[in-house]
Image 1: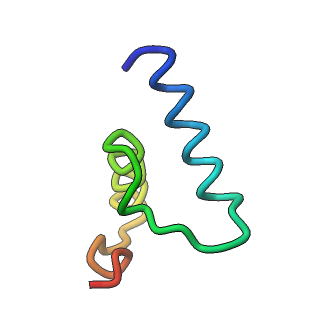
Image 2: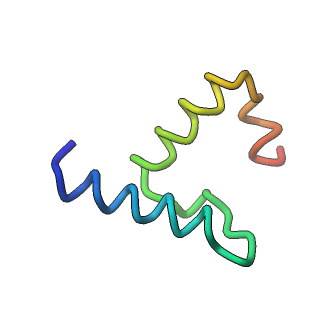
Amino acid sequence: MGQHKTESTAKEFEQLAMSKEFVSHNSSAVELKGILYCLLDYWSIDRKLFAGR
């Protein structure tokens, strides 16, 4: 991943985390979803439960 892509992914992640209203991750970039899913797997959180399915 290039420096620009890493920075934009980090900014997008921060915007989701700091938003006053819930914003679904479904419309997020593929890179952000990949990082998020890695964290879910690490913490043993079921992706389907997280996605509300």
